[in-house]
Amino acid sequence: MEINDGDLKQGILGLVVTLVEVIRDALRHQAVRRMETGSLTDVEIERLGKALLELDNAIELIKDEMGIAEAVKSVRDGLDKVVDDLIADMVSPPRALAGAREGALE
Amino acid sequence: MSGSGCGRYMYCVVKLTGEEGTLGRIGLDGNEVYPLLSNGLAALVHNCGAEPYGSEDDSVLRRWVVSHQQVVEAAQSQFGVVLPMRFNTIVRDTDERAADINVRRWLASEGDALRRKLEKLSGHDEYGVQVFWDPRVIASAMRGSHPELARLEAEIRSCTQGTAYMYRQRLDRLLRQEVEKAAQSRFTDFHRTIKRCVSDLRVERTRNGTGGRMLMNVSCLVPSHGIEPLSHELEKIDGMDGFETRLTGPWPPYSFATD
Image (cartoon, rainbow over all chains, first blue to last red; front, side, top):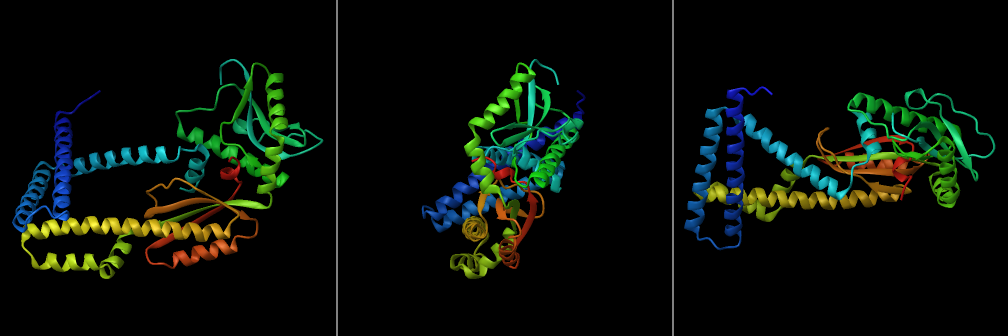
């Protein structure tokens, strides 16, 4: 297995930033929920909103500077696909011939 | 194919009495397809090993599946009604004679159920119906009409930066929820409408990728030459903003061969 030093670094950075984005999403979700349930004052809403906005901007800046926007997107798309497939398999198990029929159409 | 034992690769079941004439070398890898009879029914088979057909190479798998489909279609034109088996359905035993007996015995014991199914499928074709939707079209239609969405949009324009951010998140969440609800109710409507035009219907797994997001994917059992009511309803759905349908078929009734 050949590992390029540069690629490895990019890969790790991509994973790290993906993780940061996932945590950011969770924070954002929590903040909005608290606003919706009325447990935040107007001042708190403004302050939280500003903090999250700055976090978003910082993340975008890092992705830009490191050139890892694509890498992050592909990790996230991959994660989404894993979850989608898992759920779909639980809901209805795959069928070989149905899949082949779809395949014949492409 | 290695491994001990013999197999009978099953293509489909048809009604047949009398002759056990061969269908020729039309099976997988050019194997000869012939009927094994019992009790007025026949299973169309070819002789294979005990192991299922497997390959790392997708193009090989695809070729086998296509062969399977071609045999089933040939059987359908020859016999009228078929009960298709899925790819890689193999009945096996320790030797040739035992494998034959297993198939015939299965036809005999399942005879009534098989005949009932053949009766149900007789005079029908299977069609595939897929409905695609563009969530953005639905979303923009909603922005105007939904009161809280309109209110949020107005507030976002006039408030301070941090608050605008939070309201925008709320708007996005709400919009996503409402669009999902709309999709659900459309699904229910379409399902009801389509069900009225067909003899039977199976909801299948949706798959994404080709041309927009798939809202529904159903297999329909349609009376032969009776596709008009269904295609009429699909035209109506196509006329709706943000929706698109795809009708495929006719196919042999794979989706309705089992319960």
